[in-house]
Amino acid sequence: MARRLGGVIFAVAAAVMAALLSGSAAQVPAPPPEHPKGVVTYTVGDAMGWTIPAGGAAAYEAWANSQIFEVGDILVFNFNDGAHDVAEVTETAFNSCDGTNTLSISTVPPARITLATAGQHFFICTVPGHCSSGQKVAINVTAPSPRHPPQPSRRPRQPLLPLLPPRRPPPWLQLSHPLPPLRHPRRLLHGPAP
Ligand SMILES: [Cu+2]
Image (cartoon, rainbow, N blue to C red; front, side, top):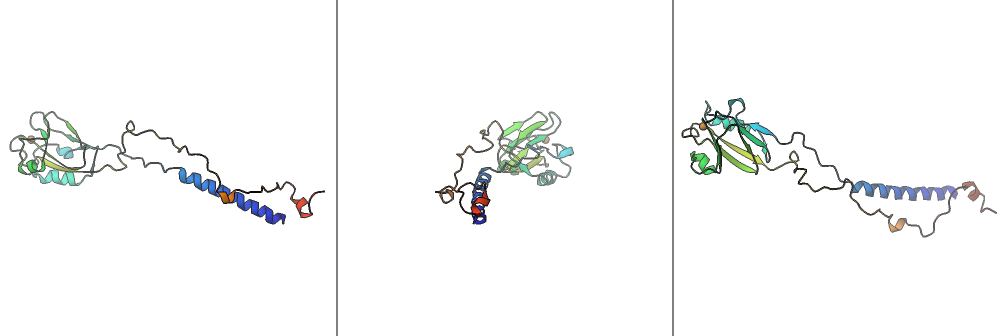
């Protein structure tokens, strides 16, 4: 009898502990994945820099296709001061090498341009003849990933653990008649104490 009673108490206690443990474990949110690299700065054309490529526009096309650009990344255009510029243009202007209506233009090297939005970005040099000779590059920018979480100053501060009220055991675990303490189980074996 005492063994069974002790077993029941143990089972109930174990069930309560399991319920509490599983409940509290489920409340702890998984930590956000940390981005290992942060914002990536790309030098357009690498060692070639920003110039009229010997191989034509295919050189910049191949360079751009070998990278994965994400929102927040930075392009650096290296060129000789006064020899070139960098203009972001529409796709239509990019295709026709029209540098008359630019979205933005940088004339001082090195030009650092942050890729602020996802989608296609088109850059050309507006010096006559340069774009049509291949000084143009199209950049496909993908949406931010966990590699680029929002800036800490913009992220609302949250407690590490949510402040939830303490969990109560479910009603079916609440005993209407508390069980007597089992300090002297042997006594129960031989009947109630005198
Ligand atoms: Cu140029």
